[in-house]
Length: 143
Image (cartoon, rainbow, N blue to C red; front, side, top):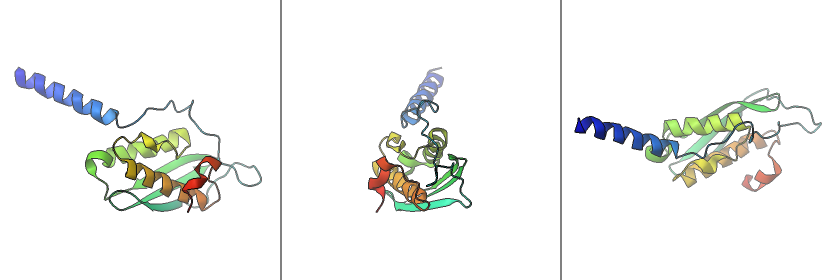
């Protein structure tokens, strides 16, 4: 009985730790306006947009597909990041947040992984910059 209780408490503690890695966002309240081209029309990427930047453990690549102004597909490849802070589940959740908010600037939400979060943001900004889609508040991440 004691072991069962400890196992349940351990699972709950782990669940809280994983869920606290992110600041949750109401996707509709925090959804950014659609990306538009220079003519003001909704942007659709004809090919995936890719950007690469350095994280804590090495290069991070972000691939984005934008359809009708919104991020419809986001993949983050960060194979050398520290699994305890930025493992596959955390990286997948970061991509989900990008898609649900249409925003690449929500990634300070990765608790304890500042270099990884900054690398993801910078790689995403570089991907957007391939088409000149960087929002003004992220212009400082272009090098």
